[in-house]
Image (cartoon, rainbow, N blue to C red; front, side, top):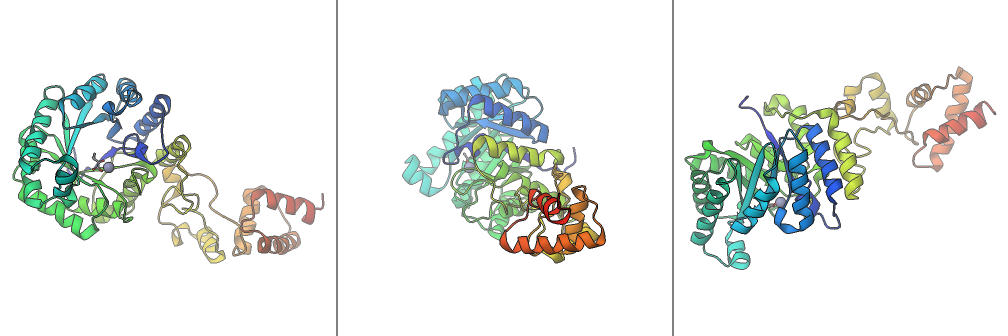
Length: 387
Ligand code: KIV
Ligand code: ZN
């Protein structure tokens, strides 16, 4: 296995489903998990088995039916959670118990009302307990980015000694900024003596709109597993958007020199499926998968793209499974784009007809934000050919 490999941990079905207003049934979760497997993510976090009977059933069904990726289930650092987690996961080809407890003083004081020593003990005990069932155990130090660094290093070292195969450091409240988060990961890599015995993972939230940037900074400093959700859905402002991280690594490969093992062609289909089943609309200008991500409206841009796509496109939409035309006709569009669109739609116009059609199109474009294919068809038939 290449040591440049970045592992993609998808939590669309767990953290993503924690988006306000989202609730998926077992069948819908199975459908998304099957698509995630086609996309080729390394790990699918299928849910939080103890949270509800529905979540338990979803994790169990996905564990039994979805082959390929590791199937993970989230459990607090308690025996009861881990028992339920294992019960749901045990039918999986490659199961992973994902256990967590908070490590920041603010969470210890107000939420857990435990001392640092007690939390350390509980974390170690949870990993040891989970190890009795499953060789693959991930430990997450919730609110890691706001935890005392010395204390966090001790927790990380001890859970690795206890058998954790993956240690995840979440920026739970999306408070980190890229340089700072990169330095934080570097410090963990340098200060935890046994860190190379586990995979270091990050899980960034998007409260400051920096989840993807923070994840990329973590990669530069030694993280090899990235957690996130399709379309960036999740608690509050969401999780790191997986498609953005994947495409940043692809597009800037010469810089990062990292590899992922996904089927790029499935990115767009996965995004559409998640959007339609969760009801979370993808904003039009969302990077990679938004409706406008590969659309060109300005005449100068359209002309450039028609001459040579790389003038205004840094990625090929077909790579991620988008095949539809990227020309959006509006008042800024020029004659070049208009005549290309006509060709695409199957209209062969003489020079004179094209002049007339273009004049009519400009008049219409002044009245309408976007001139659709239907508008163009009507315009040619009624006004140019008069049929
Ligand atoms: O944001 C977070 O800290 C989490 C953990 C439970 C992994 O979702
Ligand atoms: Zn989270």
